[in-house]
Length: 108
Image 1 (cartoon, rainbow, N blue to C red):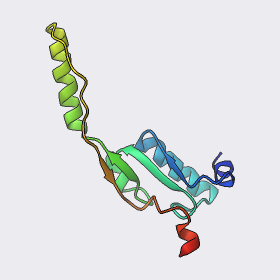
Image 2 (image 1 turned 135 degrees about the horizontal axis):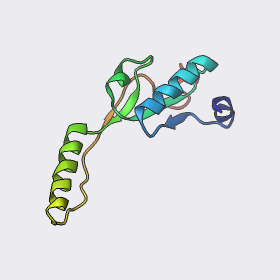
Image 3 (image 1 turned 45 degrees about the vertical axis):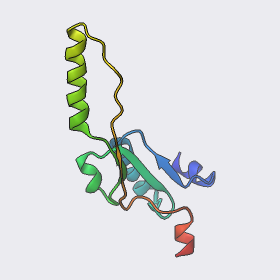
């Protein structure tokens, strides 16, 4: 699948979580696809392993502790018969070595 994506001109993949992104990094290594020179890989979650894989994974950090706190608070409110409101939590882009601008390898 990755070779077909590269042939189609894909320069980056955004994975719905970091573990899938780590799997993409592993597949790239097995297939000889250079990250980020040929393909940029971005995950979502910022799990601890994201900073330790090779190359370190660019990801979106979500505040997991705060997410859990709010979920518990909302659950307790629902159990008490009260209504709850949707919450939007801030996230943060964590730039690491698994991404590069498109065509960066050709320029360097």
